Image 1: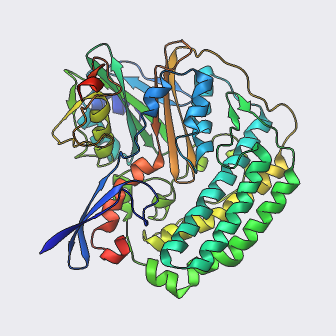
Image 2: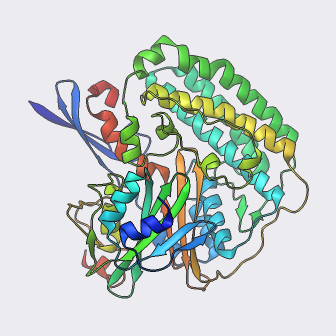
Image 3: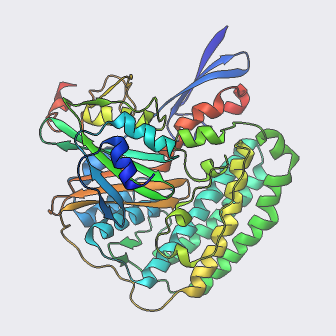
Length: 139
Length: 343
C-alpha cells in the first residue's frame, strides 16, 4: 500500500511530510480505528503513542508505526479529551493507552483503563496534562 | 478451585519492582496480572524543566544497565532536530560503547538466569566476565555504570586504548563460545528447565509489539541495527540470531549468540576506527519542531520523541523503553505454566 492508497483508505486530510526520521502526517479528523486496522493489515508494529497537550483542554496523539522498517507518525487531536481505543485491534496499544490515561486524563472509548504507571487511587492526568496543575495538593 | 498467589513488588526472584498476581488451579497458572509503577519517577515531566544538556544526565538514569543507550537515543533525537551528524570517529566510538553495554546486559542476564536455575558455577562465571566488560567501560569512560559518553553532535571522550578493548573482548568471546553457549544449548539441566517453558508464539509477539531478543526468540526478524541502520552499523557485518520456539531456552540462546555477534562488531569497529574529530558541540537552544530516534538496545528497541518550541527546554520528551512493550507479554508466557516455573 503506497502513501496515496493510505490517504484514500484513511480519508486523511493534510499533506504528509517526509523527513529522515519517517513520514509525519497530521490529520485532526483521523479515524484511529480505521488507521489501526490498515496498519495491522500491513503487518506494521505499533511502537508507541505520544501524547502532548494541545491548548488548554485537548491533547494531540501521535501514533508511531514501524512498517517494514519505515517509520510513520500519524497524529490527531482528542475531542473533549476523548478518542476511540485501538487496543481491541492492536493489543500493543493496551498499556500505552492506559499510561496516557494516567498522565493526561485522556478517555479511550470502548475500554477500561485501570491505573498503570500510577498506583490505584492516584488521580489521572496528574503530571503532564494542562489544566491539572495543583491536583497534587488534593491527594 | 482456583487461588491467587501474589509475587512482588519486592521478592528475591524479581529483578525489578513489579507485582505478579497468579491465578492458579492446582500447580497450573491459569491467568496472570502484572502491576507496574512502583518506581515511577516522572522523568518525562522533569525533562520539561531542564535544558538540552542537563537532560542528557537525566536520561542516563532511566535504566541502570542500559544507561548509555538512553543518552545515545536522546542525542540522536536532538541531532535529528538540529539536522547535524556527529563526526565518523564519534559514531564508531558510540557503536563500541553500545556493543560493550549490550555485552554487559546480556552477560548479566545470563548470570541471573543461571542463578535462578540453581547453576551457581555458571552464575559466577558470568559475573566474572561481567567484571571484564565493566573494567573496559571504566577504562573508556571513567565510570562503571553511568558512562557519560554521549554529547550532542559527538562523544565526550576519545577512545585511546583500542588494544586493551580488543584483548578484553577476545577473552569474553572465548568464554562465551567455549562455555556459556555450549552450556545453554546442550546442558540437560538447562534444557529440562527451559525448553517448552514460557512460550510466546510468533503471532502473539507481533500482535503485542514485542521487541528485541524476546521477539527474535519467537521468530520475529527485527533488529533496528539492520532494519533502519543508524551510526555506522551499515558498515559492519553481523548476523541477527533467530530462534523459532519462543520458549525460555530460545530467549537464552538468542542472547548468548548475540554476545558473540557483539564481540565481532566491536572487533570490526576497532579495525575501521578512523582518526579525526570526535567531540560534540555546545547547543543551548533547539530549533522549533519535532523529531524521533530509535536504536536497538540490549533488550530491544528504545524510542525517543522530542518536541521543541525553540526555547532551551524541550516542550515534550517521550521515552519508550523496550521493557514497557515486552512486559505485557509476560502474561501470555505464564498462561498454562506450572507455578514453579512462573516463580
